[in-house]
Each structure stands twice: as C-alpha cells, then as structure tokens.
Image (cartoon, rainbow, N blue to C red):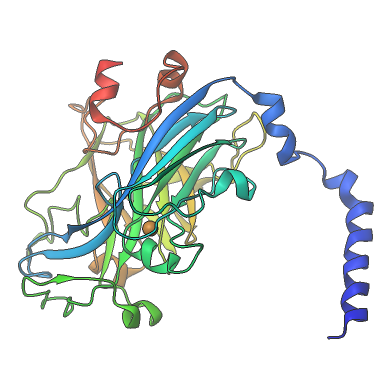
Length: 372
Ligand SMILES: [Cu+2]
C-alpha cells in the first residue's frame, strides 16, 4: 500500500474518531485515577528466580510425578496474588535472584512507564509506582529481555494475578486460581511420564500448541483426588480442596496465563455470574447465570457463584483434552466450611481487610488474614 493511501486512511480514522469521540467518551481511562485516588500506597516485592518445581503428582497418568525446570515469582508457580482497592497506588519492587534477565508486565496498569518494569539483570532490583484505575482481576507476567523470550518465561511459570476491588463490591469468600500450560522436553506423554528426569521448555511442543500439562495454581490435578465411581482413577493423594458453605456468595479471581490456549471455564453442577471489566466506581457485569465462560490467554475473569447444596462441584476447562492434562479442581460445599479454610495461597486479601490495613501490602500470605 502506498504512503498516500495509508495517510488517507489515517486521516479518515482520525476524523471519524473526532466526530464520534463525544458519544463514546463515557468513561475515559485517564480520569479514573484522579476521580478515585484513595491516597493509599501499597508496597509489594516480587522476586524472580529459576528453580525446579513439581508440576504433576505421581499417578497413573504421570508415573513418578513430573519435575520441571521452571521460572518463578516468589518461589512458586503461580506468583502470589496481589490485591488492592480501586484507586490505590502500587509501589512495586522487582528483585532478580535468578541467573537470567527478568522483567514484569502488569495488565492492571496503563502506559509503558507504569505497566513495564524494564529489564532487571541478575542480582539487581527496580522499584517503580503505578496506578490501578479499573476494577477486576488482571494478569501479570514476566516480559523476559524486552519481550525476547517472553513466551518461554511465561510457559516456565512467571505469571500471576493482580486483583483490584471495586468500591461497591459485596463481601464474599474469595479464591485465586491461575491456569497455565507446561511444554516439557522430558515428558513422554500421558501414561509414560518423564522417568524421573527434570524437563525444561520444549519449543517444538510449544510451537505445535501441544502442552503436556494444564496447571491450576502450578500443578496438574492439584485439587482433584480421583475420578470414577465404578472404575476409580486416583489422581492426587496429596490433594487439597476448595471448601465453601452451601448458599454463601463466593468470588473466583481466575487468571489464564496460557501461554497459548484459552480456558472454557465451567463449574460442574453450578452456574456463575461474570463480572469482567468495570464501569468506573461501579461493578462491571457482563453475564448472569452463565454456564461456561471463555477466558482468553492473557486475560482474567471475576466469577461469582453460590453452591446451593452440600456436595462436590468441579471447576473445569470444558476442553476435554485439557481436563485429562490436569485442568480441573474440586469444590466441596459443606456446612463445616469456615471463612479461612482455603487451600494454601488461594486466599485473596479482601476489600474490607485492605480498608482496615491501609499501610499493608495486599500480598497473599496465609498467616496475614488470620492475624488481621
Ligand atoms: Cu522472566
């Protein structure tokens, strides 16, 4: 296309934009902070590193379990949930304890100087501030060396979620769940496993979009003890369960890190309201009583659900090959459930807790909520 045509198209877009901008100028992102600045500054530290982690339990699908040479924030896949209230300012420190360059990209912010840390070399750290103008849950992830290798650092586990609580949010029991894929050079596949070898990023499997595992919070079938009634397959003898009380409002901050595939999220025996996005100072609602909701790669959704009866409900990626690869978690509705019986690392500092602790980092620490 020649330059004159491109210039003509650009001018046309500009003119149309100017004509329609008063109509669509309902909630300008740039004014969100000024309108709703809480004056609260919350400080967080993410520590980048490389380490071997277990990504699948020892079961018939993965004999001996699967070990993987991962990249991590704060020592685990996924990185911790970061929680703030709409209008808070985040003071973020990224420290690199690893051997290679890492960086971080926060989808909750807007503008390169706020979103991106820039490269942080081995042994170095960087601190900067950013605003979180809009409510919801947003992915963060390593951007590697100025995007060179970002695919590998994400596939290796460098991702997490940042929750921004809206001002009119109702109290609920809240959970953090992050989905991710593993492409493992040592994994021979389902029923074969890795024969005790520690694998690393397999670029061929990655380019073919054929992951070995689908992780929920860093492990395949982390929260699934078994499947089957007549023919039982044990999946994880060290399972944990999400527990809720029948009828209580629950809220799920669900991040899909990918790096390649979406998650068709569904609660078996449940339905959900989807509260993605936000209207400034209000609580965005896209869909009520949904059965399955698509979480694209690099996105995150806020789901609200109540589980009316006692019993087992299962959160799944309704893509069935992803279920076999680990993409499911069990939710037990029981009258014995308590407010803080979350699986480790899945509790989210609430809006109320953050209001009462305006000097606290909204970083997940399982001891913190009990002390609070
Ligand atoms: Cu990295």
